[in-house]
Image (cartoon, rainbow over the protein chains, first blue to last red):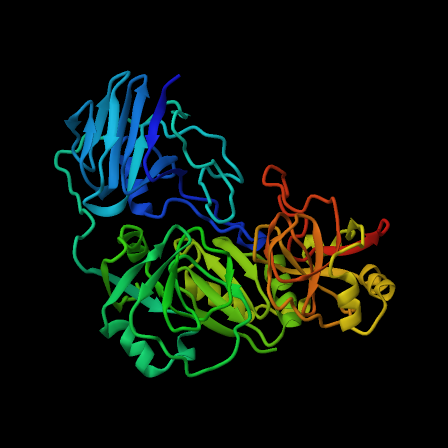
Length: 289
Length: 210
């Protein structure tokens, strides 16, 4: 059987796929890879279906040994990736021999690598998905040193031949993200809605798969009072009592009691998954398709 | 009944109703007449989130569906039509006597009201499988704890506001604990992972007290 022996998981290595949509009414968010574009790109590079399970590696530090030969691709974050000590091209399919050691160094751009292997990671699904949900504690446990992740049978599709890599690594400087109106935008003052788009924001250290807290001017409400908890979608920007926004990500609770002023468009949601604490963020209006 | 449609990104609408009763009626009507392309239908206290796959059901079409559906048709979803789930409870919760005192009744009367009421799961939130139960038969409005407990044991039967609930597993919580049950509220391996899914009817049955 082909597998991947994780000798060191780094800061955090989680198995993720495209999640388990359709269960929010039971209190279960879809979860899944935070950078869905990176997951589907990685899977396409090795000929997998888009939703095959891959490893989401935070920051870097992963060292893993292939047991059997396998194709793999590393997407998402951009940093020093080596196979048996030799550099591996980012965002490209590569072949590992039996016993080869893959190392993901500290990311220089972005914060979440996606390691896709041809055949996908074959761990038991829970509620139809192999995704780890860090808040609801559903799905495969975080990967620990010494663990062997089984690799599934190779798919029928071949590894595509790509003449030229088109890679867009995560930006190093200010990240531009697009916002759609949120359901409770009218709970905020005109000045708050303007500040959202005109002022720079900084990603705080409080950033994980549940949400990312931003630091900037306080967003003032014109409507006081409590909001009865209501369902949120990934990318919802909810504003706490102190006026600071938090962008909710894949592992958020299904419902929240803070008003949502705006919602990231899907492409920006992927970009948000790669923004590092301390990095600057600027918002613009999304154009509805 | 008024329904306000609020934007919620490029693949969802938030439908706001005037009351929880209207949410329940509209949710029943939507669930009984589903559209292909609806991914999630998530009721809450005043709202229902309608999340779609926009390639199969454009948001505009979803909006039309929600605007036009007659909620008073009131056709009940399958779970509501079925027999109630019966949850056996040992009424020895830490907050039972204090809660009864706050409501100016005896602990026995509080337990009697809790077991006599026919409850219904209005919506699920807070944690996987945590159902917010409502009942026309439940006369009380219960203040939450001033400071939430960091760890409420799994199976704790609790009340807060106009709601009843059971903690599916250990978690923090500010509801008042009146009893405990061995019932499995949440099992991700089961065909129906949540015992208390929206629309289910529920009864509590006393199996003794300490």
